[in-house]
Image (cartoon, rainbow, N blue to C red; front, side):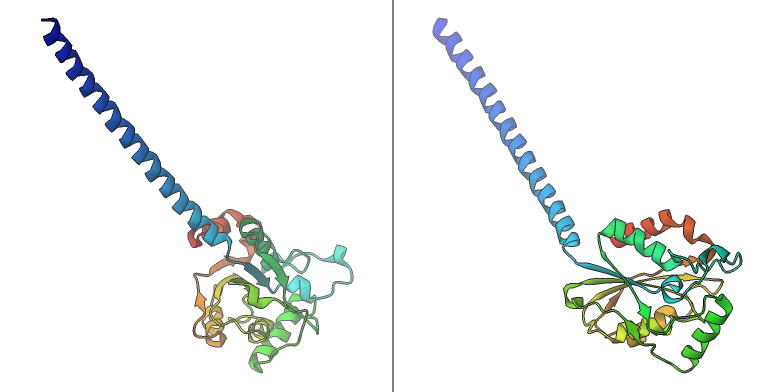
Amino acid sequence: MNVFIKKIIFVLLSIIMLSCTNNDTQKKDYIVDSLETSQNINALNVSNTQNKILIAYFTWSDNTVVENPDSIDVDAETSASVLSPGNAELIANWIAEKTGGDLFSIKTQNKYSSDYDECLNQARKERDNNERPALVGRVNNIDDYDVIFLGFPNWWYTCPMAVFTFVESYDLEGKTIIPFCTHGTGGLSRTIRDLKNILPENCEVLEAIGVYRPEVKNSKSRVLDWLRKLGY
């Protein structure tokens, strides 16, 4: 009987040890799978952050001279900000905070009037003549950037002509362009279409965001949601 009982005990112990071994193997497999999944996610995040980002923007406040800032009242109807930060600049700053991108303000040699109506009259003449206003400043390392956020107001249903000057001043072959636009009741109008017409064919233009001027200052959460949808 003692021999028989010992055999039974031996068999039971063998079964228990085998079960433990299988559990350990499953746990190890699970840990390895989880580690590989985590590494893949991290690889995706690293890949996204390794894309060098430029945030270039045109804003009225950087392209005019205000002699007496204390006397300026923002037009309640247009909400076009002649004082810094301008509307496009404000959105550009939010994008920079989220993405870590480099900021660049597009500035013209000849400044626009600080009176909004006169500024728009000047912008309309430039549009009608398809002008390319001369710029000051330059992005010397444009080749380093894979992604360019490009911001501007809607002036007369298209981009300010200075934005076209900027785009045509560089070789943007193969880059990803992400427009953002501030506007009145005209929305994006022809801004994106006209922009695509002068960009190289192999540029990828991602979904733009248009922000109504009177709502810009309160639109940070909307801009961040847009960035999240783009993967930032």
